Amino acid sequence: MYIVIVGGGKVGEYLANVLLQSGNDVAIIDENLQTADRLSVTLEGRYLVIHGDGCDSKYQEDAGIRKADIFVATTGQDDDNLVSCEIAQRVFNVPRCIARVNSPKNLRIFREVGIECVSSTTLIANLIEEEALLGSVSIASSLSHGNVMLSEVAVPRMKYHNNELGIAVEDVPLPEGSLIAAVSTPDDVEVATPGTLLYPGDKAIVVADSNIIDEVRLVFKTL
Image (cartoon, rainbow, N blue to C red):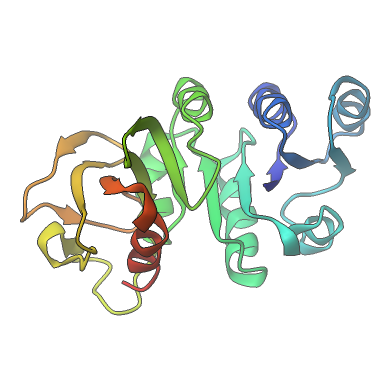
């Protein structure tokens, strides 16, 4: 996987290290020259460090954003994280964008534009540990008991359903051999019922046969 990270602070550096140790390729952008210099020396693996503004499409392009599988904004400024994710998502069509949200009151803003968001360093660390950054349909737990997997699927901004009203779990046309077991929102996790509503930015916890994971991903992309 190729991951671009904006923000080389403690969260960004930790995330970069974890992803590099897992064998991924990482590019990290930071506007502080001292931080960029330090990262260029301390990181190990296949990485690229860019000194520049992550909200500037030029620096995103320098970081190889066009080939990125995932874009993560980890700065301490919510407005910067929002803008950089918007550029990655809308200009460069990065399949998955995740933002650190420092102020809980801003969570709704990120959700409304379809950007996945996490509101604490601890939660980001948990996502990393669970390998939740390693794909559009990410393995939240490696429940490889036989051919069944528990996967976490991000709900995108929907083209064919009302994003403000959401879509009911029972209306998601999942393939046979899969079901939505729970729904994770920025504020809570709840067991899914047929009437549970999904909104952009939510995460559906799906139990599915491993050979239909790609079909599950396609279903959510085409909502």
